[in-house]
Length: 415
Ligand code: HEM
Image (cartoon, rainbow, N blue to C red; front, side):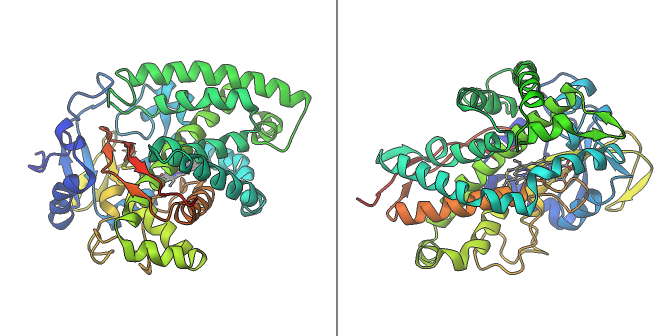
């Protein structure tokens, strides 16, 4: 029996976050795990399968995330997006996030070298300078789009730094990265997200092959050089495996951080006393502001798992082959964990949000990197644009990324 509160309609996914939460709040209170009908009109025919279990409570999302033996991420089940991909496409575009142990642990160890706290500390000064320049560039315009001019450039810059890309590749990468996130908003992702994914696959495949060739001859400090040299069980990674990781990075690190910044700065601007507190002492409020912005935005709304063995989930018997969808957005508004969850509060302690994942083996590899970017960018916005004005955002339709398409802004920049 499917639940009367329907999370599968296009109408549901076209609403604003606050409107969506009216439905999610009913389920959180009464039925944190519910049976849902197949997604209405999926982008890929057949991707909706036979429906899914919707997991909307904080405790339940954490429990599924920490039990990868029962809840698989593997590409052979279509990977981790709500709409299952053909296995070959999932493997070629989702890399380690669509793998289970032991393969996942091995590859994750290899790519982790690019994200160690030491590496992040080394990048800190460069991130700060990039944030300062981006905000100054937008401020010089007086009127601009906060998403395109402030929130978008830094995350893609950081990914290019990690990959060690030269200038021409940097300008090329952003349009592909944007198109590949696979939303169904015609103005934003385009009418053919699967086509965009395939095009991106070909384009990133070609770019990575060139880079690998170059780095084998002239190794550097970048991730591609490390991966080109790395071995798993005595075997070199193939070019396709490296390309898949590059695509995952571009998808995982780009829009996520962008929308955390866009939603987060809007929320901070809408609470003048908190904006003033950050302006007066950015360092003191930095950690609280970043964590609350990430909770508030919850940039990834859903990920999916596939059941591998019979289990009991929220009082329901789930069976092998069934899909389980984790609603991070709802878990981060769970009233049993967050007091007054719709209040934006940079002083929230503890802030047990799970926007970076519920704590299992796939916990976000880029969390430190994202936190650094958000921290530096927000500090610069507050410093350089003390009278910033933001219009209401235009939300993007889709069931994956909690995206803002456009947010007109006036800088009120310092002269
Ligand atoms: C605010 C920004 C971000 C958010 C909200 C976010 C969220 C997430 C989530 C929910 C997961 C899956 C966790 C799970 O299944 O338990 C994930 C995985 C991942 N993220 Fe992030 N992410 C962000 C930024 C980044 C950045 C900047 C990068 C890299 C440049 C990155 C790279 C990755 C990778 C590689 C994985 C896969 C890890 C694995 O499967 O072992 N993310 N992220």
